[in-house]
Image (tube, rainbow, N blue to C red):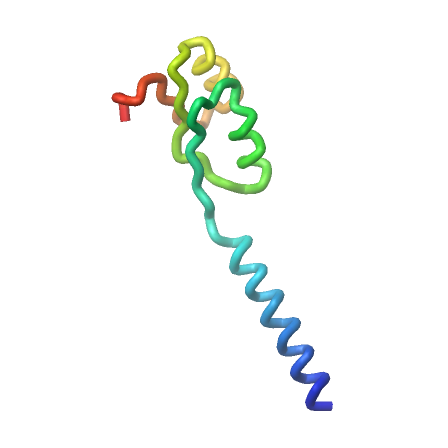
Length: 79
């Protein structure tokens, strides 16, 4: 009976730990963003974009179209 209780307790602790890990907000930045393929993957799993960076104006325009709520920076000295 005691061993069953220990096993249940371990299982509950494992579930709580997994929930705590998945509930934490993970931020990312996307350097050399291009059209935003990396951002798409991160967004799909629940990460939060801080900002994205690319030096090509055309790439930035495409990124803005694909991710209108993200901040895209064209030149590093704008930070």
